[in-house]
Length: 189
Image (cartoon, rainbow, N blue to C red; front, side, top):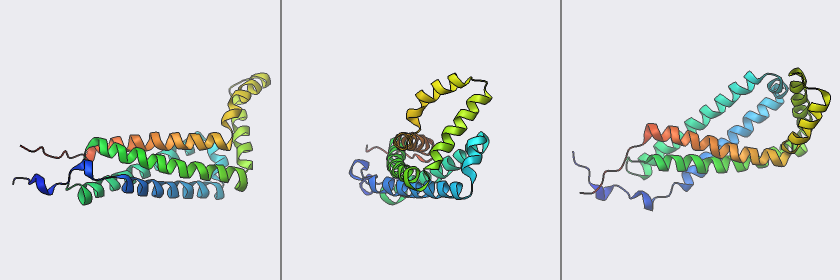
């Protein structure tokens, strides 16, 4: 069966912005929900003491991002692009959704750590100091490292970490999804 290129939309005329923003909003809401469940359920302190819990939660979050971006790319491919999508477009969807989710979650993190749970920052600092002591660092070495690390233990730093993390994670998810779902548009003869 021959494909009629006149019925296939030109990707340069079809924006993916709306779909990527929607995916970013969904991911931000899910991330905030997971964060609240973790905090209310008392898992935050456990995560600070046990890295494996944090690792599992990170894998679950990445799996959710993969699914949301996969679903977004498939729907965009089928509904907007006539059944074709490029790897670059999937990466663009991932990156833009990461920007949106990172911005929203970053703002939430600042509000959360400043007004709702200001003790969380102290827990993070204390946990870091305990881990350094367990490694055998002296009080003066811990103090010196905490002076350097102190600039990263602020709500503003968490905002930028959330933003960069969101962009990078969703870019990677978009890349992986794109490798699976890409279906290149045939060229005109």
